[in-house]
Structure formats: structure tokens, C-alpha cells
Image 1 (cartoon, helix red, strand yellow):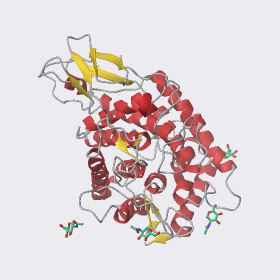
Image 2 (cartoon, helix red, strand yellow; image 1 turned 60 degrees about the horizontal axis):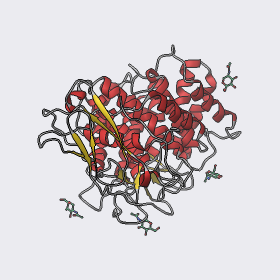
Image 3 (cartoon, helix red, strand yellow; image 1 turned 45 degrees about the vertical axis):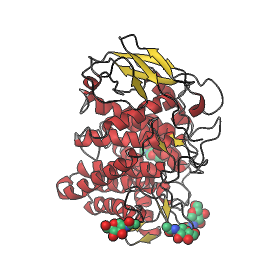
Length: 453
Ligand SMILES: *[C@@H]1O[C@H](CO)[C@@H](O)[C@H](O)[C@H]1NC(C)=O
Ligand SMILES: *[C@@H]1O[C@H](CO)[C@@H](O)[C@H](O)[C@H]1NC(C)=O
Ligand SMILES: *[C@@H]1O[C@H](CO)[C@@H](O)[C@H](O)[C@H]1NC(C)=O
Ligand SMILES: *[C@@H]1O[C@H](CO)[C@@H](O)[C@H](O)[C@H]1NC(C)=O
């Protein structure tokens, strides 16, 4: 059994007050990997690994309900629909489908289909886009779900609307060469774009047998990387958030890097499972490499808690900086997906530590705490408010981790020693605490834990 979540004990910020749920796999002298947040005091040779973190199904039901109820903006609806597909009907998602396009024998989760219908019902008359927003990429965030709806229902309305949105992206939106702007006023590149439009462009190509669109989706990722990757320093492969246009956010924003990593994996899976996979081997390898590049740079900045800072280029003692659960969650999901795709366990320890921290941050009602305000970028969500996108990211992480531990990581419980036996301990985060794990060992939670608020 694993400890999953506890009620938030006060109304102040979760980072400052939450208990630490510590899941310690059965300890064995043979276990190797030390977990950064805990040290084991039983003997010099014993150590604990983060093991195999998981959310309870009961808690995920609550997270899911929150993810469905929270959205109020275009990309939040699109992201929620994608999360429901990955969670409820994985065979329809590019990560689990045998081939792309998906099979017509399956049905979309009803809420995902309803989300497309809602978009169509409010689609501006005479306009090509799904959502009336100046963010070109965000308009298309529901696009993959619409294309899958066209497959599973056979209703041509979904394909017609998708064709119009594609036309807007390719022909009406501002461009820099082949690269499409995230904004409609003038060319501007946002890292977020990579999760919004390229997966749709690629899926449209796979569905309609149009190789040039698979190539186009790849070129978007390549072009955005060229523009946004930090060229002024040699020590980072991270992407800046927003460049060009009339203003910018040059920071290495955590969630921006997460959108880029997860979006590139969706494009890669679409291409690699399409009828043209053999012709796109080098593009596919590039996309995996560029995702890994972001993840390597991110994990090198992972903090003791398991999370990363909201702006990875701002000092940790900058009072405006803080650990962000939204970006951390999506990056952990990307790492589990990458590992499942490649068969490599590289950096899985880091992803597991991040996931364990995120499990701690989901409250008993299923809301993830400590997420960046998705509209402000530079401050946490206000007390009592939630991040709709972070709710969906938890569903991505849950699904991605379960898939990894069922496949590539099926033997990972051995890392912690023992045959899946684990001990759960709730430790109040008030001072260095020694806890009897009941397995002939003790764990000491070392303080202070670095927190920036
Ligand atoms: C196709 O989908 C559209 C959009 O939801 C809907 O208005 C229409 O009734 C559907 N057509 C059929 C034949 O079901
Ligand atoms: C950009 O989108 C907004 C919102 O739909 C719209 O009001 C505005 O006219 C658009 N601008 C351009 C240049 O297309
Ligand atoms: C980055 O590396 C290149 C190639 O080694 C070098 O020419 C350049 O001066 C370096 N830039 C900085 C900012 O260190
Ligand atoms: C960001 O914008 C400011 C002015 O708005 C400009 O001076 C600066 O050069 C821009 N930074 C980058 C990296 O483009």
C-alpha cells in the first residue's frame, strides 16, 4: 500500500504546511539508489529508493473530476480532452495505439467528445478556428480530439472543422518561413505552442495520408527549438518561454519546457505509428533527442524535494521564484513516456522522485497544490484557486507512469529490494524526525528542505 494524499491541514500554501508522505520500499542491503529527500539511519549500507510511486485509483477519480470541471480557456479544454483520452481510452491515444490513425471500433470518452461538440457549438460563424482566441496554437489544442471524433463517429462535421483549422494554421496565421506563430497579431514563438498545434498537424497528416503534414509538424518543433533554445549560454538546452513580437518572456519557464517536451513526444509517436514511419526515422530520432535534451537539463536542476523551480534561470532565493508542481508534473510524465518509447530507464529515478513529490501535493479532494498561475506565469495560483492544466497534467503523469511500470519498468520494484513490499509513513514536516519503518530500519527526514516562497 502506498500513502496517497492527506487533507490539507491548513488553508495556507501546501508547500509550507503539508505532511510529507514517504513511501519507502522494503529495505534491503542490496538496494543501491539513495533517495535525496530521506536518509536511512539503520545501517550504513541500507538505503531507500523512491521505488514505484503510484496514485490510488480513488484519488485519480477525484483529480479527473477536477480536471473536467476546471477548464475555462481554449487550451485547457483541449488539454483536458487529451488527458481523458490517454486515461480512459489509451488505445485511442498516440502513445498506446498500435497505429495512427486510431481504430474506428472504439469510442471517445463521452466528456472528450462533448468538449469537441461544445467547441463546434461556439465556433465563431464564418471563422476557420475552433476557438475564438488570438492564440493560434491554442485554437488547435482540441484538434487531435476532433480528428479522433471524426474517426470514431464517422461524422464529417469533425473533419470539416479540422480542415478549416488546419487551413488557418497553414495559410492565415503569421509565419516565419514554415514556422507558424503562436499569436495571430504578429509572429511570436511560445514554447507552449508545441503541445497545441504540431500534434494536430501531424495527426491530420497521418489520418489523410499526407506526408507533407508529418514533415510540417516536425518542422514546427525544429523551428521553435531553433528560436527558443537559449543560445546565449552554453550550459543549458532549455527553451525560453516567449520570443519575438512586441514583448517577450525570456525566462526558462518550467511549464514552457514541459509543453515542448510532451508535445514533441506526441508528434514523434504520431509520425512513428503512421504509414510513413520508415521515411521519417531521422526526424523521429531528432524529436526523441530534443525531448531528452530538455529533460536532461531539467533534472540537473531538480531540487531536493523532487520538484523544479518555476523559472529555472532565476535564483532560488529570488522571492518571486518558487517550486512549481504544474511543470514538474508534465515533465515527469514526459520522462515516463520517453522511457516507455525508448526502453531506457535513464532518468527514471528523477521522474519517480518528482512523481512522489506530486503525490504529496495532491490534496484529499484531488486538487494539485503549488501550481503556477497559468495566466500569470510568474506566481503560484492564488489560495483556493486551481490550475486547470495542472489537473490534466496529473492524469498524464498517472497514465504515463502506470504504462512505464507495466512495461519497461516492470522489474523496478527490485531496485528498492523486496518483492513489492512497502511501508507507508506520514511524517509531519516540522523538524528532523526519525520514524520506525517497522522493517528493522529507521528513516530520518532531514531538514531544512529547500523551499522558495
Ligand atoms: C455531427 O456532429 C455535429 C457536431 O456535434 C452535430 O451537430 C451533428 O448533428 C452530427 N451529425 C450527425 C449525423 O450525427
Ligand atoms: C486575433 O484574434 C482576436 C480574437 O479572436 C481577434 O479579435 C483579432 O481580430 C485577431 N487579430 C488578427 C490580426 O487576426
Ligand atoms: C559557447 O561555445 C562556443 C563554442 O565552443 C564558443 O565559441 C562560445 O564563445 C561560447 N559562448 C559562451 C557564452 O560561453
Ligand atoms: C525582449 O524584448 C526587449 C524589449 O521588449 C528587447 O529589448 C530584448 O532584446 C528582447 N529579448 C530578446 C532575447 O529578444
